[in-house]
Image (tube, rainbow, N blue to C red):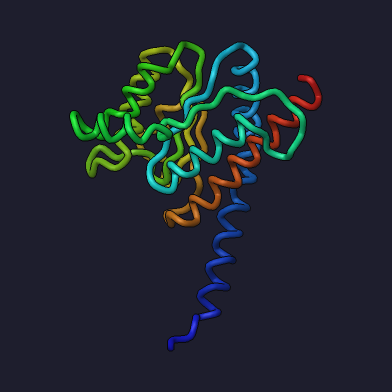
Length: 201
């Protein structure tokens, strides 16, 4: 039976902490995202949240935190929808048409002017290899309909970095570290929103 390399694990945790810590340089953007989401909901709008793979799980996690609560404080529900929640619709559209346009279809159906499309992606979209182009197409539709676009990404930010109204690019090329930093960002946004709600701002 092989031994687990403790030095590897120690190095992994050190790198993870370093990447997460670097996000503290984005506090102003995090606060802006939180304020926009909070005011967006107060004005009767909603947040549509999308991602692929692990980022899909993060999108559902984030939607749940917004809809329910983060720290257990008594606050009103926030209108937040994960674009990956309907497996029947996803598989029907992907089977009959194509997967890359499914999020676009949802934005077309659910998005209204003033809503926010919040995209979570480790790479940010790449036309050359086709990575996360479903998110890019959704962002294009969102722009057409008058939604605001927020993105958290990594690996340089990809196409979506310059396509977004607000964006954070985690300074890492390692998918796992980027995802860990994304969770920290999402939790920080939730904390800020609940702080705004508590103070009645």
